[in-house]
Length: 576
Image 1 (tube, rainbow, N blue to C red):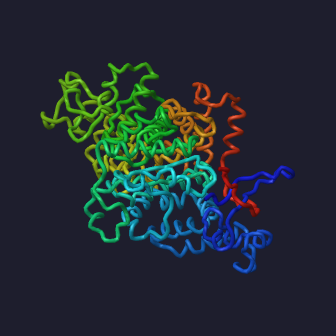
Image 2 (cartoon, rainbow, N blue to C red; image 1 turned 90 degrees about the horizontal axis):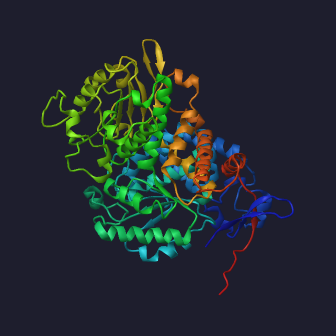
Image 3 (tube, rainbow, N blue to C red; image 1 turned 90 degrees about the vertical axis):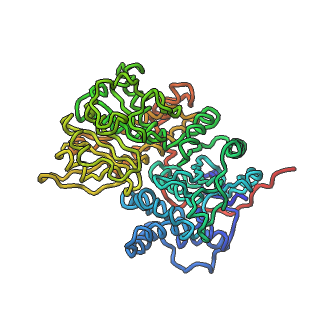
């Protein structure tokens, strides 16, 4: 049953919620609960009189109490548990606190702490959030969706938990990722939390530690695979289309061999995208665009090495190929500029490769004259030396892969080497910021997937850019929804990359920053959304309105945490 509806008073124009629940039930609904902020009028009208202490608090006063409690938490996991408990009590207050302290709290509600939380989720869970769809209940998908109490669903973030960050198969304990991504959609992008829904497709797990854990709360069977898995996904997608036909669906942390298939199969049928492939590729492209401005060079002047050819690596390589295409590089010439490496070493066209990797494979003749450490494999150091690499991007989850030898070799090729150590969480990063600075004698332009503290080198304080998808996916999702686009295209992501890079000021570039500061993320999301909506319109996929109107609509759509007035009501009874 829907617990409330959005309403506008026809006489006064006041926006309010028509609320269908009362008393204690209202106080236990985190989306509607205001804790001590219910007005006297609301207390009388909604059966709350006598259930609350007399004082009526403002949102700011409630936030002050919350921050006092936060200050008593000294362990990151304890901080995560506290924030999730606040989210489960009062979503408006949670998002107010989060937006006021975004830079401090993003590493808690998302990477790196969310990875730690997911590994222990069955042990620390307090209340369920979102939906859990399993092989046992997929036949009831319409009833499951119809029982969602929120009046509108505009955004769905869904995972099957098979490839959570760099941590692998966490089954339904991976639900922490969709919840965290929804947190960022709201706090960074401005979507209304009443319209957001995290979902776990709990199709089992092959993680023996979870299967043997008596406290594991997920579907305790080996993972659904093959045709049965894809039939399950099809039933889920059809359920989404029937019940939430205008919603955006974000695929999150699926295994590589499934993620590319799902993106290809559904990107034209459903307003959807894969953040691990497209979002990571687009935010890395934004960092590269800024680096080109700092170096005053073009993409054709660089030699790019992308290590790790899973979802993120292929997404990054695809975006770099698009940028090189814009500068006149053909696919036949691509091997001169872009070098992709996976477990077998440099990817070659005579290797057995997965289909998404094939466009980036090198012809064997192109490396015929190279000097190799091992003639049977072309390793990372071989590529850096022989290709004269100037850009090194890692998405491998191999801690410390970029060692001093590699970094020194990179620095020998260019005055300003670009290093992107993008694996999450921090414990999986290919190198630390300090290692990148020391290994390149302070010359590196650096970005990482997780936050790193500033580093002092020869009296200068250097700051690392965080190549965080939160600068990209909330704005892309918001822009696609505002535009009423039926799909998310690659061009929309490229438009988003340009918008993000444009947010990096000359002052930040002087400090070596490749991406905006965390404090700029909400405005960055707005600029991305505007660029995406314009791109959709110009391609014939979006609303045909002026630039000014699209800007106004994006600004209007960005929700800020506040308490909306409530009025009692009764839900409409469907006619027979």
